[in-house]
Length: 127
Image 1: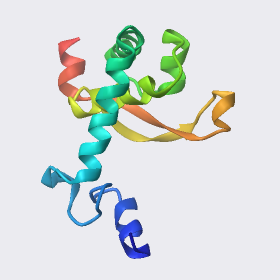
Image 2: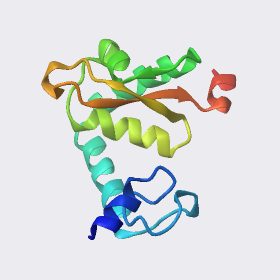
Image 3: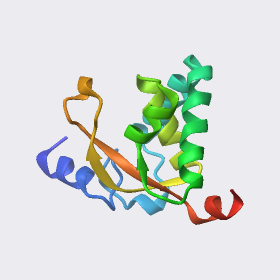
Image 4: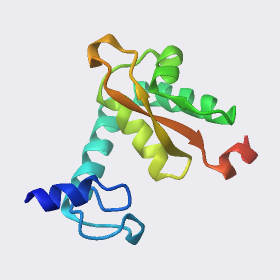
């Protein structure tokens, strides 16, 4: 990948896998497929933890207020790849959408940025 390719993949409206096309074009490139596969594998490897994380996310989304993994962690207590995979799966399912970021409060992440989320409007009305 060239520096220009890396730049394009970093843009918010571009495919994060190849940077070539716009996100709204429903990319099926190999990088996206690999990410989806990893997400599915993480959830399948820890179904009980994934269920706890999903319940916490749905609980927070139902409030209609912005939230992050920091807030969800206080409810579910789960750590590891299954947390991000569950957030990603619910984003892909149209349950939540990203509105920005904030610093992680988990000491092990050294202040890494985590996404801030809100429920997709249809989810708020259904709750």
